[in-house]
Image 1 (spheres, one colour):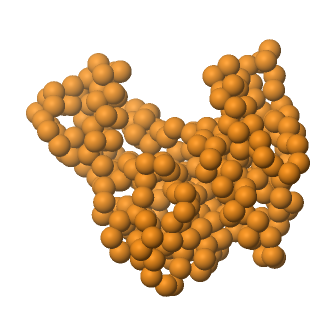
Image 2: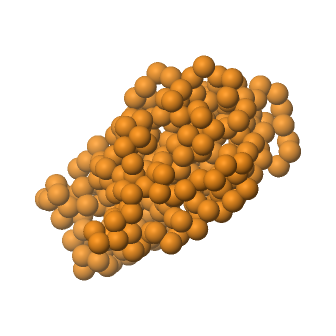
Length: 283
């Protein structure tokens, strides 16, 4: 990391942040940290020395910094082709399982959690599914559990994605089966049958032990690993590997992938990675 305004570097600032909070961002990728902290400094008109001082003195500001660093972009059925692939090729293979365990790691505000629940419901598999969703941000989890999103900002994109995923489905699927749209209140609200099915849990993927003891059929971690350096990515993927059943599935973001050793432990198809005990080099 390079020197910025003030006499300290970003690496030194992250050490201060670690002292003042339960969180350790020292193994986040340099580029993502640079962007986030630069924005925090710009938005608050602070140089690096002032940022460090404010972090040491103001706990509410610390929470603001943590939220700003961990913010993730998400949307309902983001990258529709992947969700269509899950609907047609991945989820039906789990129909014979007596219970399906699913973990959304870094679930942010919950749109992808609800996306997958809709797929399960369409295949009559929601009732036998056990769904866990975790994130480092309590603010994001509160939003996810509430299941309310701004109408004007999201509606057209969400509806377009939804229709793209289900355009070739065997039965007609209506967006309003799962969401209540209130233009007057500028809200899209998730219906109760989805909200009541999920366990939203605060969890730091980087430093905390697993908050549950299940193994999983599917683990989602989309657009999270991209913020970590290579060493931390490997440790997180190892955790996922250890907590998947054999032939269990890991779903990553479109700009994420596996390197080195883990290419031999997963078979990849369309950003969906299947755990296997045999060696695969098809990438």
